[in-house]
Length: 167
Image (tube, rainbow, N blue to C red; front, side):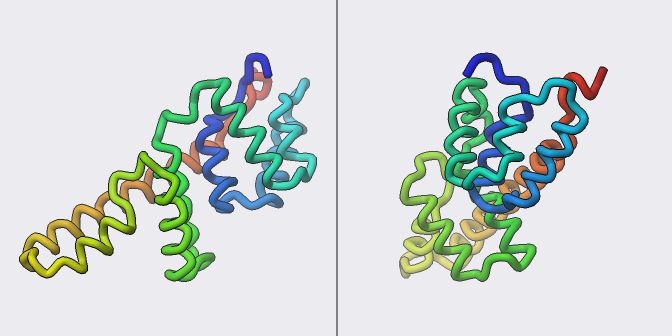
């Protein structure tokens, strides 16, 4: 992969990885970008050809490394933000959200609070109610920040125009 001109691939990767941006939706989005482009980029074609999600994720992971975008926002945090958006839309039940969050936190070093932290904290009897309330408020603020970041990043992603389309 040589120079890649495209949107923030880390956001695109997280949206697809979390299944917030579903195959039919990113296929249609990429097809629309191709139609407005004189010479479509490789990444547009990869998304528009109906390749299996795993192949698209692998390609975007490589693209995000090449463009050095993978760590612009903690990747696992933005994925969790997209899971929260799916939960809010009713696409995930609470148990599914918790399963995804626990699975994600098992392999993550970037999450500020993990679900395990909350579970351990809530099981401790030695903390006063006031401290627990502050902890939960901080955790809630953290999750809202992740959700809002995912949402605004996704809106920005969808407004991407290729350089050709801007000329």
